[in-house]
Amino acid sequence: AQRVTQPEKLLSVFKGAPVELKCNYSYSGSPELFWYVQYSRQRLQLLLRHISRESIKGFTADLNKGETSFHLKKPFAQEEDSAMYYCALSGGGGRRALTFGSGTRLQVQP
Amino acid sequence: EAEVAQSPRYKITEKSQAVAFWCDPISGHATLYWYRQILGQGPELLVQFQDESVVDDSQLPKDRFSAERLKGVDSTLKIQPAELGDSAMYLCASSLALSAGNEQFFGPGTRLTVL
Image (tube, rainbow over all chains, first blue to last red; front, side, top):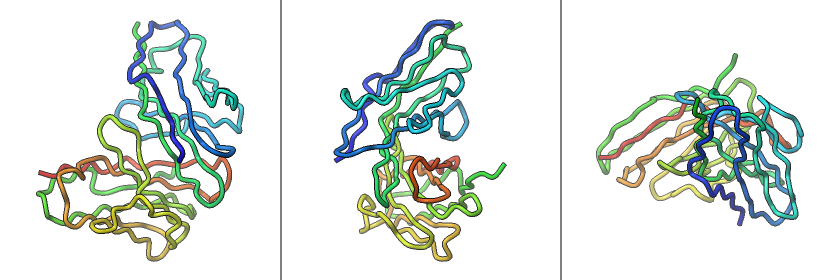
């Protein structure tokens, strides 16, 4: 069975501080990993995916297969980064549905 | 910009009543998903369609839930009868195809409250 674990429900940092949102996964195969974000009163949207290896809004995430982790990082948090962040996993074959973690709320204080 | 549409946005119903939710995916998106999100948790898949065919409904409580996508475009999710534990946000998402890395686009959701 596939599972995604986000150990922190809430992460509070000050503006300009580094941010790391943790994500660990369990999957017997080669998963695709994603980070989705939900800003206040907006719909869930894709932030980044591991296969793209891109940086979006200053965020990066590296897939570590040895540690089965996909932590989200940003060197300098901004107030507009405050949101709910979900790590998600997609299996292979015809089942591309996402398995989500329980989410971490990031609060960036001024 | 094209978006996934859902209606209604909010639904309050009494236990044992029937409810239905509607989703209109982004035009041209062959894959459609229904997720349920209980407060404090991440979304969980209920059913996945590829065009009009069900790909995965293993987590759909089939004794009370049904879903259809008759013409491979919009979709309806029905609950009959509703139970207290069905109170949740119901999210619809669509993607262009069943291929690696394909982004899923989410609708605003329908918040269901069962009294």
